[in-house]
Amino acid sequence: MAVTTGNTPAEAQGEYIDAPQLQLFVMGLFFIFGGITSLNDVIIPKLKELFTLSYTQAMLVQFCFFTAYLVIGIPGARLVKKIGYMRGAVAGLVTMMAGCLLFIPASQTATYALFLFALFVLASGVVIVQVVANPLISLLGKPATAHSRLTFAQGFNSVGTTVFPYFGSILILGGLATVTADQLSGAELDAYRTAETQAIVHGYLGIAAALAVVAGVVWLFRNALKGEKHEESAGLAGFDLLGRKRFGFGALCIFLYVGAEVSIGSLIVNYLMQSHVMGLEEQAAGKLIAYYWGGAMVGRFIGSGVLRVVSPGKVLACVAVGAIALIALSTHTTGVVSGYSLLAIGLMNAVMFPTIFTLACEKLGPRAADGSGIINVAIFGGAVIPLLTGVIADATGSLAIAFILPAACYAVIAWFGWYARRPA
Image (cartoon, rainbow, N blue to C red):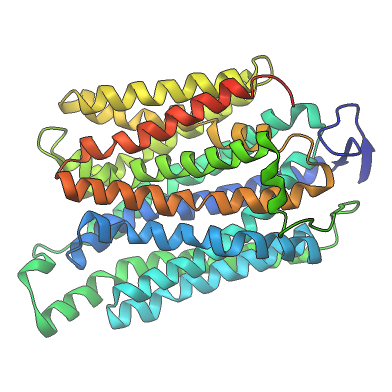
């Protein structure tokens, strides 16, 4: 393994790490944290029923999960810079495992707040793993193909987001009883919640076991990566990078993109259950989440090729406009057209994160870890936008009206794509 000097200055010194075998390892990380994140879309309707929550209260699942990006993003970047990418990945995987195990006391006490805390800890590990994965996949190859390579790796993220919700809906939503929480009270309600949350516990215990195995394997290769370089942060923990117009605009778009994607994904089950849309049962609607994330998976593999021949900024602008059009189509129609046009937004989302990330981070050089940390803070949009979408849904009594907010987010992303259509 060697550090090779390239001709394209995507890194400050035009350097990249020639280690193709490590690309498979990084793609595995994308699969893991993508799948775990998408399980929130299955847990939300489950907890909404069990704890008789409003849309705003149910969206606290995403708020607590994605708040970890705000809290852990910068410390996570510092940790990775201190101990290196491989050891950083182990630290993230172990933290994720701890979060999964916290579902046990949360279920035993049938306390919603403990579920939220467990999700925060789990997400903290996801943040650290993501701080490792995004810049590392950019470094593992020539800078000229960074857009395409990161999009391809995000395809494996989408494999996880497609597979996990499908089987999660069978395991978690399939266990719902014939009674509902709003029909019970007192000790009966507590017993019902404890019993019904066991499905969640069993699922996350399986994930914890898998994470332990992966962490052990990564630890064996903790010294495999040679030549990685990190530069000390300047300014306030690297926030001075926001002074660069291109990077600052890109960070804002990450905030908006994640918020829009998570808002739609979180409400798909409830949206498809509406009588004027598809009128599905909860488990059937949950299985269709796979189409939303599956569209992103297919789009990312296709996009990795398209981005080699078409300006990434122009591609980003086009897919953002496409997402707005699909939201308009879904909210102004009924039946299967309404349902599947909303699910098709996943295809539009496909290249957004990796393209925004690489466009924003062009020429950061040895400050790539700082940039990744800031981008991870921007993922906090996944906490804010869904919560606001839930507030709008509760205030108006309409999910269709609430989707105006994600549409506005996509409009700003389209603007950034056009702005960043030329190389930095």
